[in-house]
Length: 391
Image (cartoon, rainbow, N blue to C red; front, side):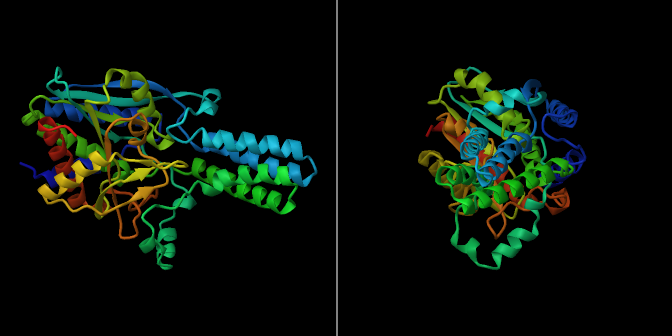
């Protein structure tokens, strides 16, 4: 009989070998792998295919190219064209960030993403807990080089910050600067806009051309955690609680799978009786529960949900790294913006960053399985508590 740690490690070592970019045949293969593992546990699951674009570098890159052209237009004396290009670029980027509507994607090529869904417990119960992971993996990119956080850490800035830096600030900053340059006629601003937008465009190009990382921590750890939670809830289902296990696709292309799940199911999931527990990148040394997240606007997690997570962690002996917010997005952002009680369980290093983020060394050998176990224990305990007492 395998121990839980041995089971998690074995599952993850197998899962990470699947090359699974967003909305790809490999992502579908990963979804089928999850379904087969759930069937071994005795849990029936289904795959729902949803339309998705599958990248973020195309819509964001279109916006940054517009910013570069806007800056150049102003430098050439065509301020109206510069202003229009700046507005278009900034709007294209801003509306593509979750949880917004992403209109540019309607014009881009489509593929299919795969959501894995299964239900456990009392399907007629009034209360529902949705446990979420995602099974696609990210492309690498120089902007994600692990040496950057180590270099920044030498300045001591991470000790002072509880909110991660806004990586997308230069990306949207270029088109915004192009607009301001056109309105003011400032050639200095126009040069800044051009430089920022060209740099951001090159960064998007670099990401798009690189290979997909193994994605063991992000987010294979949550996938294998979901499998272990299925084993536990199948063996001992909480009374009077409906449990939905969701492994979403296309999270790395700005949560397209989770957005599709919301469009399909949020109308059938009452906000007053549905609680989301999102698991994302739970294999770094320190477990944490996010206080807020968002690319531009910071969406704060509900205080009652955070208090539940904190009390449950204390009772189960799980230590949480405190008070972290991120300036990007997980799959928790969609239900959070829709008004549900949500917690996002993640993890970080001593530099307050996820370990091996979007880099080829994101392999199971570098995963802290003790942290993964803590994430599983906390998720299970929260779900069982919610079966007894709602927030």
